[in-house]
Amino acid sequence: MNTTDTDLNGSPLAQPDIGAEAPDLDSSSERYARRFEGVAGTWLLSRQTEILRQMIAPWPGARVLDVGGGHRQVADALLPRGHPVCVLASCELALGRVRDLSHPELQTQIGSLTALPFADRSFDVVTSFRMLAHVADWQQHLSELTRVARHAVILDYPIPGGANLLEPLLFGLKKKVEGDTRRYRTIARRDMHAALDSHGFCNIRETGQFVFPMVLHRTLKRPEISSALERIAQLAGLSDRIGNPVILRAVRKD
Image (cartoon, rainbow, N blue to C red; front, side, top):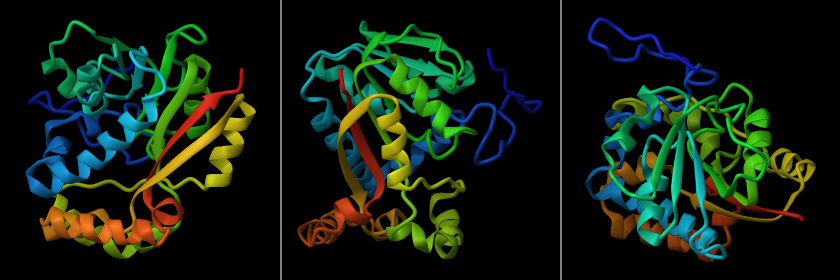
């Protein structure tokens, strides 16, 4: 089981943005959750929730493993829809906000995010949000997600194009607006698709969440304007081409 160093107050010490021992620790914190509060944050998270629910719709009541899901974003989206959810965290601290959630269909477990402590095809659907951009070995992480999934995997990842081209220029603004933000890895679609194919997954469906930088939407604090901007981009065919981060669903071939 992974352990995480803490300071004298018991708070986790700073970790590298990519390749940390507990890559799910930051995203499971209350500090991180505050990024999705207020009118802008609520709107941003609602987009992810909507897409996730659409993508899992072919498997009503599917048993879900959410890897690195201490942030509670998947559990909060799927438990009310009748999906049993098991959240796997890298350490006790990384269970984060899930520890405050009480639901008869919620389970939690501690274990490695790159060597999942479950048998092959143990869960109907396996999800991973906020992880591929930060784990040390994204291909090993993906390999484990697909191994444990009976029907499908649903995950998010940032692609190199679109607003991410501006990331070096916008990082300072993001830091100012969000308070804390992390560097992250981008993954080319062709590399992601090839990796999924090698693990026997196909019928890939992808949706880019935001064409415009998320920091712009946070700065605007006007969901009606943000929705209009993203709707225009979607009608122009840009969302699925350059929207970030991408939410992907892939289905097992057999």
